[in-house]
Image (cartoon, rainbow, N blue to C red):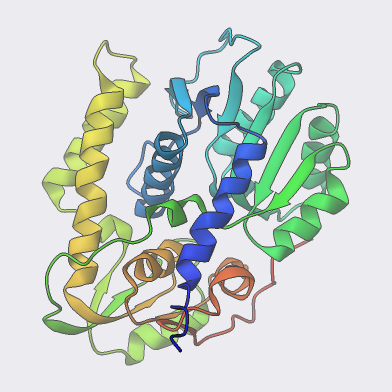
Length: 322
């Protein structure tokens, strides 16, 4: 008697994203808003997963805009769904993206608005209340969040919104095959921004391996090209930026895959260092970030993945400073 082959946990996570089709049915026409125009590879992985989801499910993107080039008085047909990029910038740490999100809610009261899986974090209770007051005026907002803490916060505050719990959109990219055999032992893929922790800094002092972050992954020429494209968007130059950026970000994501492929093991404090390792089924350990985003995500979705291990629990707040 033959046993049925076991289903990989990553197959399960990818399949859960199909729940979005209840809100954005196959064949829908959409405006895709707040897609990333910067060098953070985590957001680029989310974008590639989102685009793959649209393509795989016959969802038609009529137009897309970043935070840099969203028009002031854009007319959107009522039969088009407004879809906002997911990620980790919902709250008051990254105000430009939150202001755009709130502008969309305010300016398009009669459209269906869908926010793809996000992590919620606010330092100031008043800012969270302001967002909730605005969101609760809209009758057709669908907010996907990617960890249990964010789900609890959203359901407590957003009484008029439809709130759902789903994994990150990058899971649509599963599986990513390695590009070459590993020739090195250990990669430390660590945050270098406001979300790094004292635990990470101690490990940096003690570690023996190669250190990298999204910004140091790219060389000088690659950074110059990113800045040139971003500048063109800011100045609204008549260039096919969508096509240029799409092809260039394919290259940037593939560079991250190639780099991860060259190591036997990865230790990371980047959520998408963790998710990319999971997508490649690469052995790795995950450290927390400053407000518990990584550990919350791990406990919600990826604790059953054998190649992943959470090794440090931050002493920082679990999900919000409220």
